[in-house]
Length: 346
Ligand code: DAH
Image (tube, rainbow, N blue to C red; front, side, top):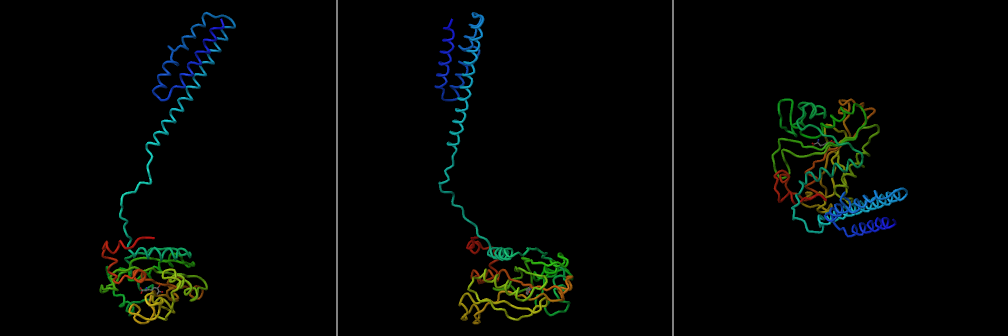
């Protein structure tokens, strides 16, 4: 009776060796039909059980189970292997060759106005300033009154303005954002800049435009002095124009600061010797600044005997014109591609 067991063993070996030949899904399927269906040799061999009795019947049953589960396990392993191979082949087929040259895209430029505005913002953010935005359409009250420029003050005429109605106008400077910032902080210390557009009824020529950009700056706290103003603006100017720039503070007048200064840098064209760019003076004016006027602090709810502060205002186009040697402010607003495409963000 032992030949029946030999038969089981031989059949198992034959099936497993057939499985070794299986290489793809198609042959795996036909293997499954041949060796794992009801009509397979293995299933048919099972019918032999009826000729057996007692211990042999049990042993045969066990041998058949072992053979079946060996085939099942090997089949599953093969199935997994074939699936993985198929995925690997698909990945290989769909691989993108990133070393191929790409299309020749033309890189657009960025208006130098925004290159410089972003650089100014980055500089002040890096030393802890908040960035604020204010409205372009402003009330007479914030644009002038709160900046210590009452009605009939001659400084109003210098900013001859674009009015929407008798009490509303396009802001003539970003300085009113000082008042908005202080209103918002309600007596607490602050450090902020506000970049934005400003408008004046100006004749448009190479250095004047009815619309231009400014960045306002304001620091208010206890014990803020002119030394803080000087250190801050020296740092700013040297970051924008290079460490070698000489910085000069010159007494000036603004209604909202006392004392007021104008800040000049040594001419980058002649290095300070005097040329047509600096009109022979060796220096170029770059911004206005000063210690916040006590009236401005008072109107904003800050006690000037406790708090002090400094403020500054920088013209964005002016900085850009000096940095890039742009000779006409109108170029910022004409949208000429030949101009813009020269400026790419580093
Ligand atoms: N608002 C001034 C202008 O438009 C610029 C300015 C000067 C702003 C001095 C300031 C400052 O904050 O302190 O001409």
